[in-house]
Amino acid sequence: MKKPVVDHIEKLLSVQISGTRSISGGDISEAYLVQTQKGHFFCKVNNGPHAFSMFLAEKKGLEAISQTATVASPKVLGCEKLDSCSLLVLEYIESKSPSPTDMERFGHQLADLHSKSSPDGFGWESDNFIGSLHQSNKRHLDWSAFYVSERLVPQLMLARARNLLSPSELPSEESLLKRCQDTFPKVRPALLHGDLWGGNYLIAQNGTPVLIDPATYYGHREVDIAMTRLFGGFEPTFYSAYAEHFPEVGGEKERSDLYQLYYLLVHLNLFGLSYKSSVMPILKRYF
Image (cartoon, rainbow, N blue to C red; front, side):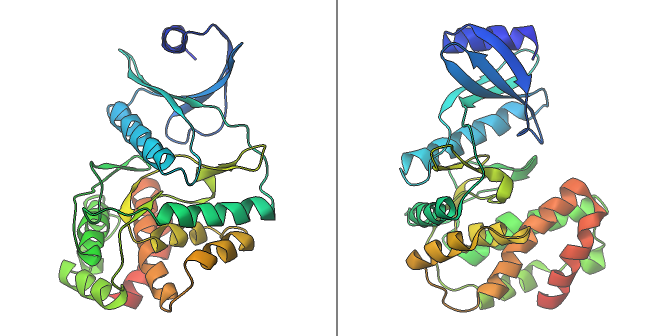
């Protein structure tokens, strides 16, 4: 970590830093463990042009989750824009491998998070990011309209602009909307993590589940569940605990496919053509 960043953190936290080391947790940004006599802290550093906007969105998402008093999230200690970079300083969570009991607790707590709703409909107070990609959160009262306009269409258009999908492979907005209206039930807005794969939660040493790296907004709660299943799934106790609050009602597989389509399109746009073979079967099956 560069000295100007160290100096700024020392001033920000009123601490003397005894050491820093690079750690995992920074796929987009550099990530550091910051060691002080007052404890350890976690810091992300990024010098990209959108770094401060990304960190500010992450800060808002973490604070929104924290304010629900459902699932824990790291305390935000600083979100700063310096001359050479931007940085986000968080409480450091020492993690452990999850046990079935830990994941059962996580399932209950995520259901509690999803019970938090909004009278303003689907969306969020501001746009944010999914990975390093812009995520539009314009408010809609209709879930299908939100999902098509703010999720599927932007990613499909980006894939076309990057020559990852051809015009003939793109469904029309009308067909997208009709399929979603036919498939999605009437749902209430639920506060979502928004990017809930296995790398975006921790289990603290005391067994507490902790959400990190959110892409928060109000949407259908099944979006988070679909994302948990995309790359192998979570511990069975997680799903059984969650189902105690939200039992399955039928049609979950079709909805999950359509919700996973968004994340697969994001991966296509971030990582290239290796994800096209996952995107196309869903497009062909439903559109």
